[in-house]
Length: 294
Image: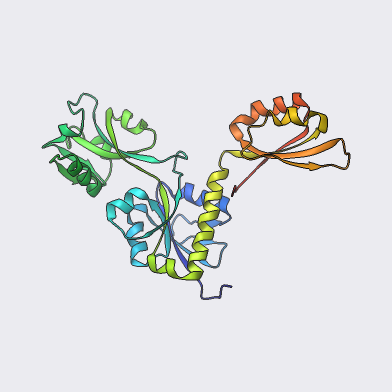
């Protein structure tokens, strides 16, 4: 049982991931109120204290104990070399529910076709250490300079190539850049301070948060369906369901009927519901789900 002194210091990523992270926490049951002028969002959980900080800095602050737990990318854990506990993978991003990629990109008309062609070249990037390790693995010597932003516009005048993060590649294409290869795939991780992880109360709180966040991600793009079915039509109706698990079936007061409940991908509903109706289902009811925990 928690006491008034039990507080978990949570680092939330400020910037491109901020809105999707706040939305994800809301689906998990933790509701933040964020002021545009404040780095200290309020939350409806008195055991949590949150601060917004850039994802690039998160891992080292968690390592130092400034935060007990935080969310940042696998890329920034590697880049900073932070020694933290990786509690959970949380595959979501600002534009999609998939990992992001750090890619080597060059102008469309560049002669650079592979990493070997970078010998003696100049590369601009925000992930200097990751890029240097990549070059070292490939026995290539090149100049790597830190980019403070707008990295896509630097080739060819200010750099021969860039290492940049992308989800869809659209920004690179818009700047007439060609992807040579992917250096690293990254997704958001829930990370914990090692000392905090050894504290029983904090560890349980962190594990609870991880479970609920994962459940919110798992529920994304899925809906629940309820319906009534004559027993004579049950087998035919069930054959139309691409269920995640076997559907739940319950007897009704009329012994000739049953109630069926299941979870399906939302994108399939427009096809499934007409098929279910034709197979004999009645009173079909669709509802949203915020968390799915197995």
